[in-house]
Amino acid sequence: MDERRFKKRNLFLLLYIVFALLPIYWMVNMSFRTNQEILSSFSLFPAHPTWDNYATIFTDPSWYSGYINSLIYVAINTVISLTVALPAAYAFSRYSFLGDKHVFFWLLTNRMTPPAVFLLPFFQLYSTVGLMDTHIAVAMAHLLFNVPLAVWILEGFMSGIPREIDETAYIDGYSFPAFFIKVFLPLIKAGVGVTAFFCFMFSWVELLLARTLTSVNAKPIVATMTRTVSASGMDWATLAAAGVLTIVPGAIVIWFVRHYIAKGFAMGRV
Image 1 (cartoon, rainbow, N blue to C red):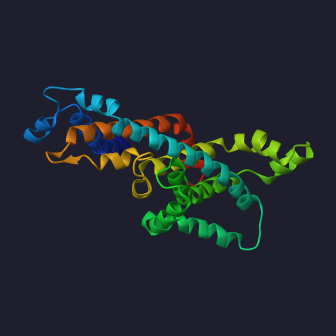
Image 2: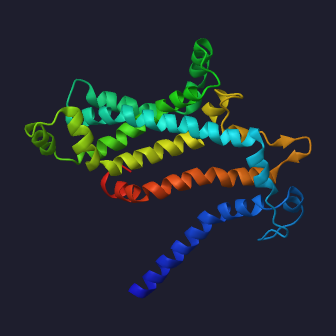
Image 3: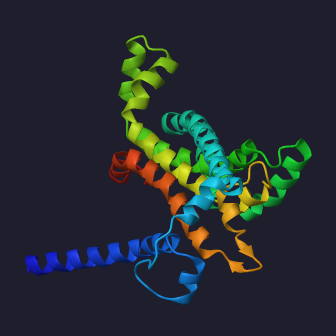
């Protein structure tokens, strides 16, 4: 009975892996083919593999600058989100104040709101103050969604740390900044890693705000990928190569925080 159940689990896991990896494999397959081959025939492997699609991306400024712009505002957003969320999450975790639960719930409602709701206010505000088409504009817009998520995740990790550790550190003569950086942060490094991962991924894949608030100087790769239609039709091959390259930064981030993500599922609010 146990052996039969084990085989069913393995079969289900195998089917799930195939189902999850099939779109990625097909995108990689298309990235090594020409548009003519993609539209004319169906095959599991490229008949005549080519690197021309990747060469186009790495040599065309309109393509590779999109990756650079995306990495810039995503990095800015992730750093600011963590910097703001860490003290806020500590306050929610350690102190009780008037309206704390209501404020916490209000933060989460911002995360639940579709980005389209805030698109017009951001557009008018940035147009007035001259922040349109800048990296900081997109990074600050994404803060509205990433900071509540970061506070929620970090608060779960911090609440799992006994308060006696704070009191012991104060008795030992630690100031609050020294305690927070040297003692407290190492205890919740798994939570910080998980939070950084989710902030990075939301900002990296978000399209509506990033596309609307930029035009040339800070245009992200997601906006560039939506403009591959020409008079000759859709450039499927180049679009597939660009899609493969957009997976790389996320895969690298997952590799570095893979252990923290596993701990997050076991300990925190992930």
